[in-house]
Image (cartoon, rainbow, N blue to C red):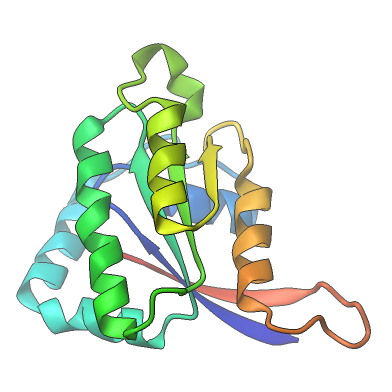
Length: 166
């Protein structure tokens, strides 16, 4: 069984943990404890080089914004720049994700905006719902496809992924 190192990046509250937990356990975190987010934010700010280390060791990257929060969409751009800077390579396995499609009525970022940015970055784009599990499996399957340079000889698709959520 091959291990994949996936780094999930995005602003606080966009659903990074919810997407990861939904994929791994098949359940949605209904109640979110913002003190956990605050803790991680403090850690990252205090140890800025830590994010560089996670990026350096990561094999694939999921960049998440909330489609009900325009600022989170703007915040994702410097994160992608940081990945390119640390990896020193433009063609890093990466997916742009607009999460919270279940809140369509509150949308602030159009599907077209997300698609245009992904086209500019030359990476796949998905809109997901961690709550309804919409496109969550497809998201992780796609990042694994990108990380695989050659298909496994026995055709076995089983994998183990390590996710770092920043």
